[in-house]
Image (cartoon, rainbow, N blue to C red; front, side, top):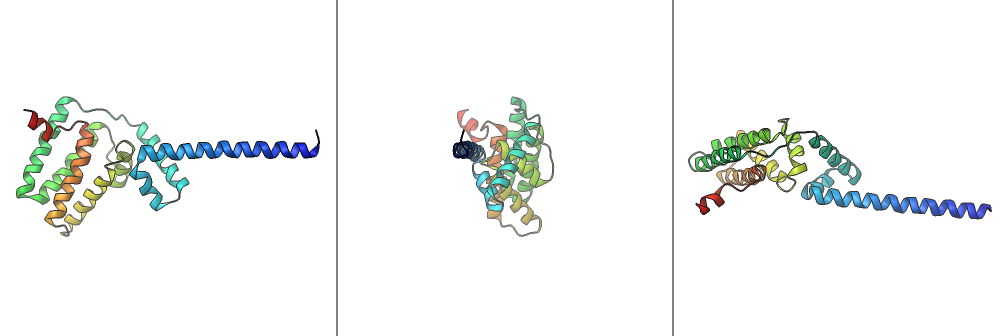
Amino acid sequence: MSTAMTIILIVAILAIAAAVWMFFEKRRTQQLRTKFGPEYDRMLQHTDRRHAESALEDRSKRVAKFNIRRLTVDERLRFADAWKREQARFVDDPRLAVGNADKLVGEVMRARGYPMAEFEQRAADISVDHPHVVENYRAAHEIAARESSGNATTEDLRQAMVYYRALFVELLEEPVMETQEVRR
């Protein structure tokens, strides 16, 4: 085989390898974007694509090691009743209701098998299975933090309850709040 033919063969092999690599990178990006949705975009705001995707894959591997389980019917009903009490409490004491809602979300997370690490780690863990509501969790937590320093309005607290509820309903895996009341 001539030198020119060898060079052409090497270039062709490199071109094919590059095309295959690009295909798999694009597929990886699409899979992560589909799985993480808005959380994928949030990560891209803080770092480049490669680091964001690596961090998201690390999250998935971490959460895969957990023993995440469905709640029993009794647990779901107990948690749903507790949530209804906090929603009712909001009318008379919004600050206490928001604090209790945060604790209740933590209890449901713990019951499902999520470890109760510091907040950012909890949010990262939740983002793997609940990427469409993790931003609600972050927003509710931020409002609760503002409230602890006296910088949240009643409307802020109402919004925090709405945010906590979105995650709460997903963690329960069944909308047991108003929908069951209407059916009775």
